[in-house]
Length: 272
Image (cartoon, rainbow, N blue to C red; front, side, top):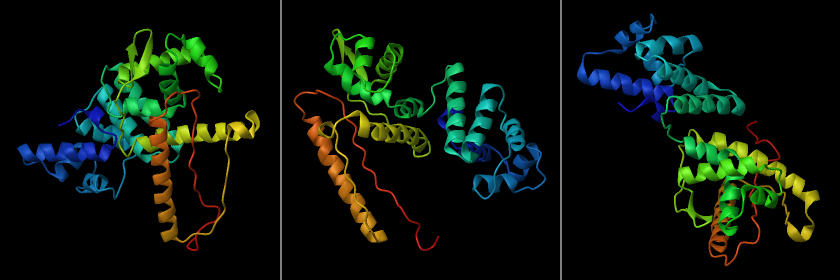
């Protein structure tokens, strides 16, 4: 069975535990539920199927039935909190606790590096800026950033990206590595929402901070059917890919830019 830190969904961990025990013995859902202190013989089966859920107290009981203790038990309880978080902030805090538990136990958590990279605007900006500033100090890189950032933040970002394989040392400077961070569909939306909020705020500030010659803001309010909406998404994706190719072929980097492609509803659908 995989280490617990390779899971973000406690239900999957429980199901894999059950399947493994079942493979080598006559283990049953009834036995599993009894070990966790539940009277219903099918309760944990329903939990694994997503038809029910564990409470905080239930997470403690099931963790014991899973033979978890110490760091692994705390991690399992954090997973339960993560899966049932009702707000993005609660979900973010629960996942950060999972990262911290893994770090303190010197265990590498799947998706941890991807989560950290996309959680803040600093890492993507520094990854673009550092390679075109050979020999620059963290303080000099910080001064090139339009948003307030300290030299310590830049140094921490550089160290993280070298460790994650996104940058590598080249002489007195850095160059981009070909590595790409890919996270799971459960985790990445949490980190990306944090970055989207930051970038949306920076976009608002840019209206006053930069003259029109240095920024481009356009908008269109329109009525669409569901089919039209999907077609617009395809066109936006194609546009984004074309712009990516322009950036990749750029002969020289003078500034780091952010492009937000935003399409969102202004009215509820008829079913609302």
